[in-house]
Length: 233
Image 1: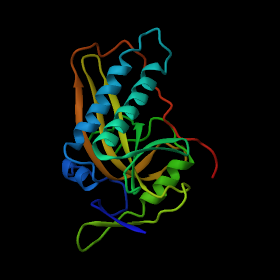
Image 2 (image 1 turned 90 degrees about the vertical axis):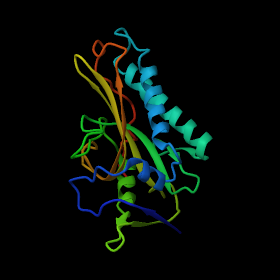
Image 3 (image 1 turned 30 degrees about the horizontal axis):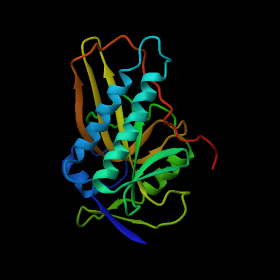
């Protein structure tokens, strides 16, 4: 049995906790120095690949390209720089810290992604695996005396997951005169029956990526296949 110390607010939620020092919080998750750069690199790589889609592409092409490339680049950076491992389980595509206690999953969010106040929902409905991940994440509670959180995360089978799952949420904000990709690394605490709406224990906002060198309109809204398997437990 291992003890994991984080720093997140006590429940109940909402509102979600927002406005922490992102670099400090990512360091506590052992994401290494310049951790934001790894996430921004993944977001940027995904955006470049999404740009290969045209108005003649399938509706899901740009979004699928973005998500697949983000997963690939994030996994590569975390593995090469920090020794993280790839983990595919329950229909989910994860990056797993070497000690097996922290996982990161990439998911498309809604407009609230990367903005203050209430957090985002999932753009695509999630299933039983994400519900189980939220159950494990709820074990992370704050020590009222120190402000630190102590989570006891036992190692056992893949169902439910024996790790705390953080989500790299991203959102492409398009208007007639601007385009921005926002992202955050956030700790899921609960999921609604429809698999979309959720509450968050902690939201670490990654610096946004404004786009100035391409048209902001012309492609349909993106859709991706980043949902885990929606089957009954």
